[in-house]
Image (cartoon, rainbow, N blue to C red; front, side, top):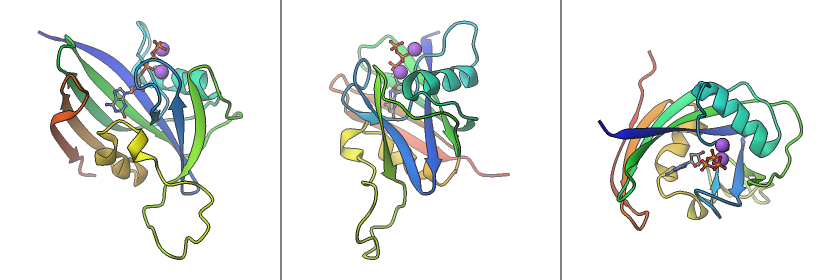
Length: 168
Ligand code: 6U4
Ligand code: NA
Ligand code: NA
């Protein structure tokens, strides 16, 4: 058997805007992402997701599981299993931390001419992991998904597969 490392990634969605963080260090440095990190020994993925959101953005939220992402990277001898979570409300005050600079973005899909003066910038996909455009639109609509990406050593997507989980 190969090895898998468990990670979390949590997004806050409120009033048609989505909270992303600009990552200041570590994996995904200089990219916007949700808030998350490694699941530590003795905690569940859901517990880790709440803890990481608190550590990285200073807020507490009730999270709902919305997706699973599975990544392999050439020359990395383990795979990444990322549980993706969503929150529609939070408590506390959003703060910048050593790891993340939080920022709200517009979560509306339309580029309608009626949005003359958008209050928030659109989601900065060009400054995010390259897989995010495949599944973030589903997350924004609250539609559960799964996906797998195999990255080459240059971090470009070599092979991918995404699916929406049908609601029962
Ligand atoms: P430490 O070393 O403890 O600060 P930790 O905060 O535990 O690290 P970190 O920040 O390395 O973990 O977590 C990486 C984050 O990046 C997790 O939220 C998962 C996320 N992630 C990893 N690959 C991703 C990818 N291809 N697309 C994506 N998020 C990814 O959107
Ligand atoms: Na992290
Ligand atoms: Na961590």
